[in-house]
Length: 111
Image (tube, rainbow, N blue to C red):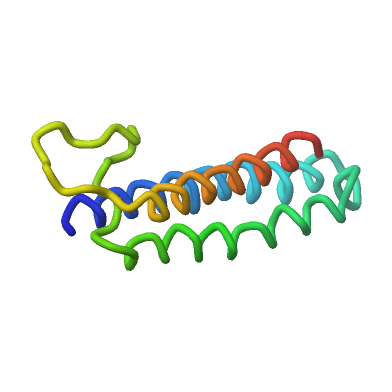
């Protein structure tokens, strides 16, 4: 359980705080103000990018409660000394959560 909590904490801090604040907060909010424009080129894409964060968070948090969670760490590499099997659904939820984050990041970069 400890490894699952540490993995979720790492993903939460990297993919829900660092990247959305740097790209979303500074890139999508402050950059148009500094440029003097009213909004970004595609404001609807900016809104969709923001609304992809809650499903991504729900998938990431729900993976902790399936089986024993994923204790793979931020490298996705399973522990060699552990004989605890990780649920395939749990791993798929973690990877799908990161895929949604990638789509959100690409939408931010296009804008």
